[in-house]
Length: 143
Image (cartoon, rainbow, N blue to C red):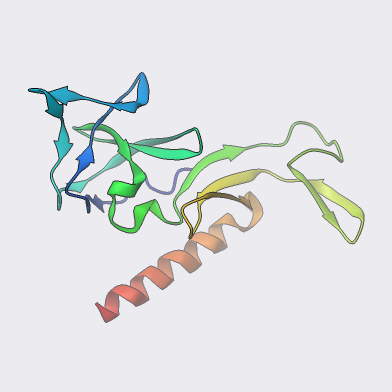
């Protein structure tokens, strides 16, 4: 599940450097300086990946950059899906309630409010995203 695919984003950092695809910690250089995406540029994100707990986004027409360069910093966007591996009662996808195994869950990776990566169940992802989108529209009405 990739919630960002049909959305427009805006570059909000004057120093939004483009990263090398083969090593996201290195910058693409142009004339001896890091190549940048201009602040205020409206963009489309076509992919996202996590590298060393950092989220990078692939900006159509530019290349890879940090999610921190975007307005709202990619908050609440879903990045990856982690299906369960069998019906084992152990592991990160196992759901329990009051000491009783319920089932294995498919987990969706989300950019959390503090910028860290969180996981939600696919069972609630639709409702979570609706809540987030409704809240975003409400906030934009006050801007």
